[in-house]
Image 1 (cartoon, rainbow, N blue to C red):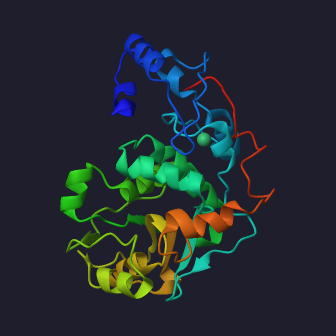
Image 2: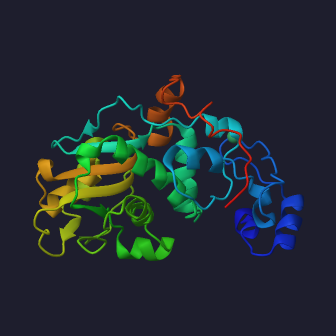
Length: 291
Ligand SMILES: [Zn+2]
């Protein structure tokens, strides 16, 4: 409720709301700093990420609403440059941008369930950067295909987060996005609490290709979080792609944990990797001019 009030247009109203209801970190609850150098309408959210991100991946970005405090932002970890894409069970490569840890899942939750789709371009910039680091997986002719939601779920949510991510990645890399190639023909239960076998059963035959695959293109299937890989596996089977002609691009690969918000992330969080950490890279605690 409060975050919706803070999105209300009008600088004066935003300042009043921010004074009455100071923004707090979605992950740890700490109060978020105000940023006097940001535009008035964005001050309550202190554009923590902006300057460092522009330096790292280039281009200009709109600034997401403020979600994490500096400490929790510093806990975000990119997948190390040296990490090879993870293979799914059928041999499709899965390329991810972030390690699975609580701060990342907080952002994903805010994107999917709080409607903060302003986060999509920011997160997608890291997916695009991950693709650039593995250019052999993004030859000319690649097409981004987001994992579709069932129409009823998409109508309830108002958007498909994977489509938002795919659109932003496509915009950054100049790759086409095809949202019509694949459809979800039946509603499925949430995968979050299911064991691997139940996940496979849940999504079996859930997808359908709507027309023949374009000749000579490589499919980059875009999803937000990949856990067991059952969903992307079912989607790629429906597309009829050979592993050599398709790969998965996601925000993070949570490695098959039944509940990615707890088990998978806990182990990763306990680890400290100087190479993959965002801390000290210019992405943490920065309060720069907004654009
Ligand atoms: Zn925090």
